[in-house]
Length: 389
Ligand SMILES: *Cc1c(COP(=O)(O)O)cnc(C)c1O
Image 1 (cartoon, rainbow, N blue to C red):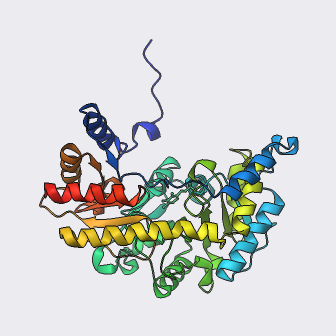
Image 2: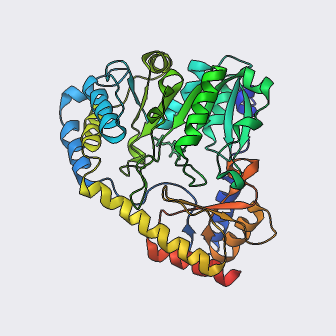
């Protein structure tokens, strides 16, 4: 029997952006090349020990073994609210305005189910985190791509959104500090974005996955530091990048009770919450977000960024200087496409970069370096690329 045909939404998915890279990497590995992967944004550093120890103790308590609360433990949500207050100076009621997420990707992917009717438009950054557009398509929504251009500091030009698109738009996704470009935004831009969303009745999903991964005293903003953001915004937070906890799958959404509640209704019907022991460990993490052990992690990424930027200057590769994230967004230094440049670098040097086009058409001409290997390996990778060029 031939397999049953999957739904159109699966058949129509864009090709997995990393498939070509994965294949080329396996080929290079099979040829015995020493691969240095600067492709995936997954911290190589371990979760701080005090968080692991809290999980170990919590997991031994049978009380954590049963179904968790759908919306998250109340004590977890209260600690999330305290974090929002201490870190950003914004007030949230843990009982109604915070929702636990099984990683922020989960909240982002479910948000269109909560807010978008078929045929309505979601405004998605290009280049951008691929989940925004795919999740929009899953619910029959239409994607309008907002180009992130170098001349605008990789922020969208809201005045370039055609009025008929703005009228049909119901959601906007924004993410700063930004993946893949590393760009950060000004309060002025965020104020414009909030005003635009208020004017057009648009839910602003603000993906703040990199809010803590910043260096040299730079402090990324919460969207809720902008006046009236509460009328339109829902902000997604993740412990993944902040505490090197990508494998743990824990985050939270913050926003007005009506917005957070709509997302909660989706989740109640889809999942059954995050493991209680993980929430207990996450509480300890968020309470100690400014602990020296946590801050030391950012210093490691900051030092890698500095070393990488200096080396790129030596090689003569242009890049976006940034005070945040563990990504460096670089201009392709040859007249090749992003994909062919990255394929050639991989085949000849064993170094994996992500072509900008993996994040959308507007990524053409760029590639992304993830600073998720030791500094010595990072510099060795760049030495190899220098020799190739
Ligand atoms: C890593 C990442 C996330 C997802 O983080 P999880 O909490 O691990 O699901 C969300 N958005 C962006 C832009 C990311 O880079």
